[in-house]
Image 1 (cartoon, rainbow, N blue to C red):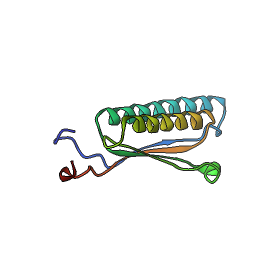
Image 2 (tube, rainbow, N blue to C red; image 1 turned 90 degrees about the vertical axis):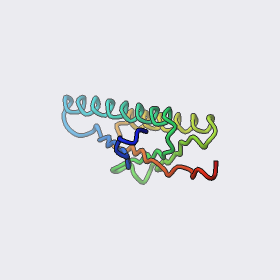
Image 3 (cartoon, rainbow, N blue to C red; image 1 turned 120 degrees about the vertical axis):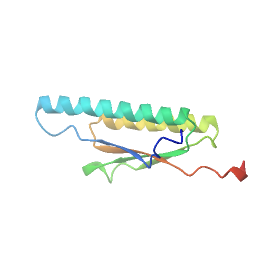
Length: 120
């Protein structure tokens, strides 16, 4: 990360339910959700490639909130590659499942504190 770039505290994507409105509104909402999800997946992969240490938090909103668990996954240069890949796939899979079901959900990418240099 360049020193001139502003520090990102958190990136959040709000995916809205597709159930509201007429057929044109549903189609438009579905398309917007797909693009937002693609942006979230792109950022997720970019942050991993950049070697960032961050948490992925996925949570369903609305009526389904109590039925489906919140998901928190850690992606870090300090974890094994296999563990990071598993967490990336789990996050993407869950986003696609909830998107296909038309659920309202939130995606948050939260940078974590880096491991202090003296521990390296």
